[in-house]
Length: 430
Image 1 (cartoon, rainbow, N blue to C red):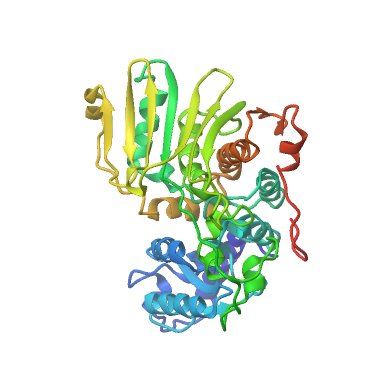
Image 2: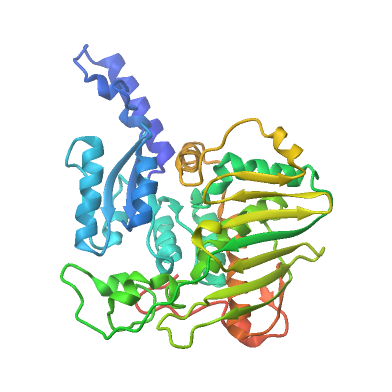
């Protein structure tokens, strides 16, 4: 397989050779990069795996760039496939985007250089590994894995195949969070002791009777590696609140904040060593994840991440607290507050919202071309996600856990160690 960078270089050399040898010809200006487009030899060919609500936002930001071309899209729901193709075709004013039910057909295409994975959590690691094995670079939505073992397998696979990988922790590319991290790194809060990661209260999903799978929906592909369950609308629409397919707000939102915490502390290759906490569950609910939770994740030096699930969606935030003050980013409004307030004078520019993923996508595309490491590379994403997996295991087991970041094992707890991985439903493997 020709590597993407080698392919682009080959096309440039071929074009140059033809320009020297051939007679003058009439060439469309778009082929030369005019009309706001990059020449084909400089464009990255993108395929999309999973077209839901999140993908509509991220894909639009990808398609803002002239050096990217979305050529294909895969989703196991026919209505979503059609909607995705229509959106891409409208952007490029043609009908060239090809849609697939099975994303493996997309990965078989030799012209696709990179993929955007925006499926549910259960697919993030298996799809990324298959993409890497097919020679594609990967931008994957978070959380990057559904178990700790999956995350480690993903890190190793990306290294083995030398693929560029960006996790969708886009807050690393947003100025408000970058400013917050810089305040911490410069010691302006004094001795740091607590990082409060405030998520919202988890919803409950009510029981529904099984029903026939709707026409045009490949439910078996939707489940993928997750255990089989009878089809219900509630399980499909509320997948994030069932342990087989998601992990609730603690991981769905929490991994964004643990990522910022690890990044600000310069601990992308390690993590906390102890977990303890409490949670409330609704025993009458069909869903399985907690309604509220408060989990303390403690590093070896005593710094503590508090993962808290309570209150409203709009109240989510991350706050770093030290002996000399605190700094907080409100996720809903992107407003930065601090005590002492004089800290805010150090902030030079206004921030884009976390909702704009364009800068994060740009970093990925630049790294596809340069083969450099992305701002949220696999090891960093895995370590941040592991914190949330361990926190969820702590409250599911109902006891404190000790963790060794070097061996990635729980100390003296065989049951917790068994839950670091899961058996994938056939025929899927890592």
